[in-house]
Length: 89
Image 1 (cartoon, rainbow, N blue to C red):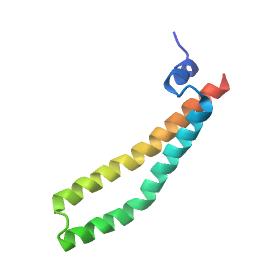
Image 2: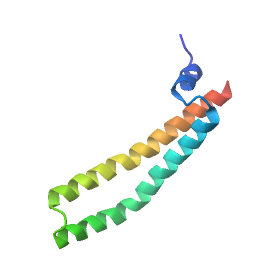
Image 3: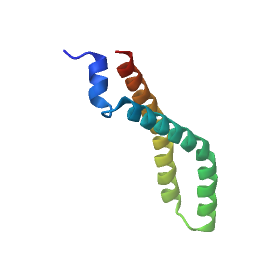
């Protein structure tokens, strides 16, 4: 049976340093998406008012951004923990 560290090494890129950089970048990208979400929401509302987007299109885009921001952040944190587990052994 494989330990969690062995599993983390299989799931991570070949080089742990590359995995660390990717994890930090993914977490940072998720944070930026979180910070930009209110601005995107306001921009979508303006586009709907101007008639450039329908209500359904704006709602669909906002749902996508509302899903991808926490997903990217949590994926980055999970990857970061996996890389740290690989460094421990």
